[in-house]
Amino acid sequence: MRVLLIEDSARLRDLLCEAIRDEGWKIDAFGTAQEGRLALREGEYDLLLLDLGLPDEDGIDVLKSLRAAGMQTPVLLLTARGAIDERIVGLDAGADDYLAKPFHNGELVARIRAIMRRAPLTSMPVLEYAAIQFDVASRQVMCAGTEIALAPSEKGLLELLMRNGGKVVAKSRIEHTFSEFGAERSSNAVELAISRLRKKLEGHETYSSIETIRGVGYMMREVRD
Image (tube, one colour):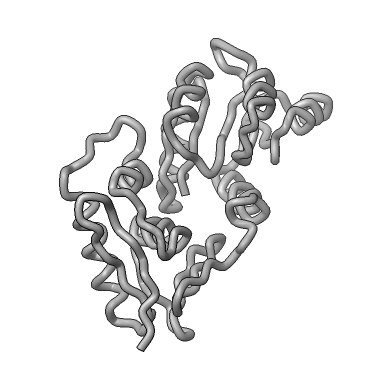
């Protein structure tokens, strides 16, 4: 999963980024509404964490304009405005949930999981392709009743391939999914990630293969005897 955080406090950004990464999720973090809007135009995100007290624009106005423009990405508001009236305004503006500061990181993560369980992208709580089952909420990967042990980044790669089973996923899309905004990307990072995932899947009867489409990207294909 890839998260966008728009929060003006540098210290809180760092703390939240650490909590998100500990869950195996990717996160891009910015301190202004303008930077966040640019990130939304350039990338795809599964969740937006939005602070209301931004230096260049009120978070409620940001949320209203994004929803008016058709953005369907789930939004969790983060704010020191804890009054009931403020919460109502935020929810009516299009937020999926509201978390008042200060909060515990454990509650933040739990609320994110709850939002994603009911979000459109995860309306199918268990992805299935060939003989692989992927529970997107618990991040558990199963094959024939046996759990497949994967690193968080490998689970993210598998999820992307399963969601696009039978279709080619461009290498550039994989690079974007697994590199945080502005991070340096090694030329062979995708190849190494694919190789590791293939090796871990080979020990199970998944009835699938990950094929290299030369010059384009990769495709997960169902293989039956």
